[in-house]
Image (cartoon, rainbow, N blue to C red; front, side, top):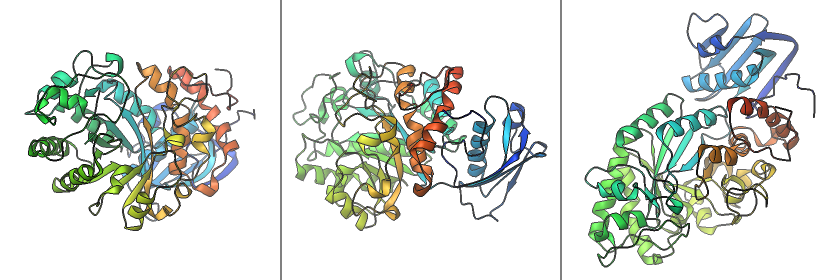
Length: 461
């Protein structure tokens, strides 16, 4: 491994432009970083200006022997610039001199956590989010409902959380709990303070067994169904031909839309193996317009591309296959695409055959595999112009603790974060593995249960 002498480019994600001044350093205090943006902070001077053409999230850092000047057009750019400063200052507070000019490749850079198969509390979500924003993740996708649990309070439908969030829910019955609307508002506000948009997902018409257990009138015959806590998929479905279905769906989506200030509402749509193609399209024809009715933009897993998509609908591609005619057609018709191929971005895949947690249906995903790909080259016909961004889902079938979340997230999340932020032609695996190695001691000191991937030459903690 190279010397641990700091370099201006030792940042994840890799900045767009780095101009080092090797003879210059500046030592900053933690207190100064916490005050960045305040007008009386002489060590870090912040200027809000669009003179540099940095865009909504871009920033410019100039580090001299006298101090730091951080320029951005918007407060979000200031925040991401401070995250860069925090990385550079780690350990001893010494900042390498020079200039960084930076802006993201994609506007949408997300991490998803599955609360349905194992619930995580408000404080646990906040702590996880604090780790994510250090790598300039700006969307938090919350998978709130599935066969094994329903994790968000819906007024007028109390059994959804009484039953779907009660004891014995989650995979193996090991993950009970739910968010009240006040809890959800707390998460949304906490995220917004960190320039992160919460993207709530209510998965339908499949992945709904928890809802059917709570309200048997939503089943095809009105009869009760048994709870499920296994990890199977594809067996449950809302009924496309019942008006009760749409009264339920609209009540839920209106509640979630009203509680969510961000622009997106994810309606799932994946793995509807127990829904006929005709019923699937009929269901989506009624449901896809609803987010727009309540001022939101619909996102769905890429199976929704088989239906007629209202303008503004976003398709999230998740399969490991490297072609999909429906997604290509949707992109050609002007629908935006989020790239989440399971064999590159799914943080719940095992790192290697011996990984004690995770799944392997999409193959093994070591750190290099999570890093070494180009979203604009993944699906023929889905060009960079069609991409809204990149997202890294973490499904929770095998998770039982925050330590489990951290183990599967780090160091792969930084890899996906760089894919989403940094220019493709500037990214390099050897550079990334050197930079991510620097985080090992930092994570260890913070108690983060990261995986010491053998691909990385980790320094001693």
